[in-house]
Image: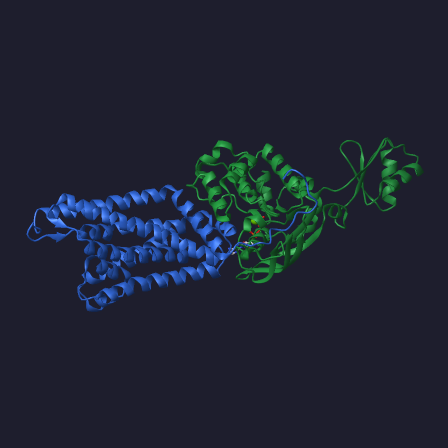
Length: 267
Length: 310
Ligand SMILES: Nc1ncnc2c1ncn2[C@@H]1O[C@H](COP(=O)(O)OP(=O)(O)OP(=O)(O)O)[C@@H](O)[C@H]1O
Ligand SMILES: [Mg+2]
């Protein structure tokens, strides 16, 4: 930029391909995620809850049921941990989206990645992958910690893999739902309330009243599917039904949030 | 180059931008003026594809901005200096931008130096002053070495040093052949910086012309300042010829509507000796007020003025 040229050449005509643009957008999302403290606090909270809760469950178990002759699989540790700890991870994914609307940073973001379909793909994929990978790793840690606490527990590879796969499904679908809700509602409070209600509060509330139609309604909520996938409750719901439930809600949230990002003003 | 064609944006019943058409040429600083709520920011947001036009279109370097894969190489913008995640450091903010364009992080350090953010770049934006945020925003705009720059009130909150720096920067960017669109409410600053003006009011185009033309146009009232011992004689003669004459505090006359030649000739006729004769152009502020007088939406009402004076 030293010598003054009369008229600058227009922007280079060689446009990068969609794959390149997408991988750069995903890279930017990744840097975004790890350069705010909120992310790390959420990870600390998730670690404490998942591993801590798993350890407590194992310690509780050490006093009773499992015996050397009749060992119990330790995956319940990670599953109980994720049941609660998932919320720290969902908050992480949700805040990644809504904090941009609170600060107005969505403006610069869209002026750096104006192709909104590309931004949507990156914005969904990066938090979902981070949440899933971290959550599965923490659940595995909880399972192993449980083994150390109670020597009467076992962890056969097959059971471990199955448990982690169900946990991965719950977390991936939950993260996509959280991001979708964030994109749709654009407000941290609104999106958080929505996700907590759907994933935690309503499923338990509806089932606790003992009113049949409320209990039936609960069968349609994503939180019910998540509990079924994690804890095998309610026992009369099939795994397929539960998976369809969490994936369906994730798809719904993604469609609605995606519509708002793709079709409406930046915010 | 920015091409705006029939650009329109309505929010419910409000026509924020109303059928705007203009070009912003490379190699010049184009000042974008208009009263509060005239639609300047909305226009810039539509140029960047942030807001969807109700009608019309805008092209940046011949293409819709919203389709670009490496947009920061085409256009850099500072629209709202506050629009940054408060918990991220300035440097990390720029690293995100660089990453999104496939630019090396060396470039981030270059622009941090260029805007004089220095070691503050490592601190979180939460603690930045408005001026530091403006500098960070400008750094982001420069990151991709773009051919087009849009600045929405970049001098807001800058200290004198900062204002002079922006003035020099904007000048240099235009001299390098870039397209620069700059909005500001600081008329004296515009007068010093802009080559061309686009003035809008209530979303409509009021003027699109070189600044020299605006300053000499229909709404500009050239005045002549004359000093003479025979003040009353000259004033009388000028009044008889239909010119408007105002005596000034310094014992001079300010003559409206007459070129300097005429004032000199009249002085000779009435035998008034002239000690000083100077043509004065109206300032951009005066012309602007005149041009936009009808389209100011948010006026201070008279009672407020009275209250303020008390
Ligand atoms: N998101 C929105 N929803 C509703 N009205 C809006 C929105 N954004 C802008 N407006 C309206 O559009 C008009 C133009 O606003 P804009 O911010 O573009 O003006 P401006 O020329 O930038 O003003 P200023 O000099 O105060 O920055 C205003 O009447 C404003 O109230
Ligand atoms: Mg504005």
